[in-house]
Length: 94
Image 1: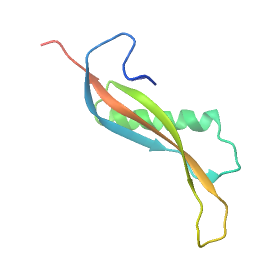
Image 2: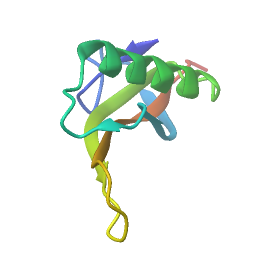
Image 3: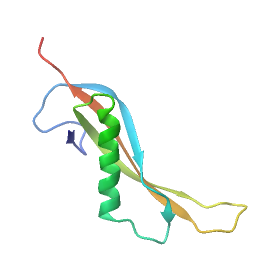
Image 4: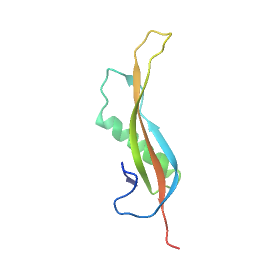
C-alpha cells in the first residue's frame, strides 16, 4: 500500500476517497521521548486500518501529539502520537 504525506501521489493516478483513518500509539510519560519505531508502528496500524476498507493508498498523512494530565489527580503527564490520513482507492478504467 502506498503512503504519502502530500495530498496526492506522485505517479498521479485518479483517486477515489474512502474516508479518514486514524491510529494511535500507546500512552507514555510526556518526558519520555518518542521513537522512530513508535512512529513506524503507528503508520503500520494506519495501513492495516485502511486495508480493512480495501484502500490502495493513504494520502495526506499527519502526525499529532495528544497529551493529558488529570486536573483533579496528581500524576504523570501522558502523551501519545496520533497519525491520520485519507484512505483512497485508485480509479479503475471502465
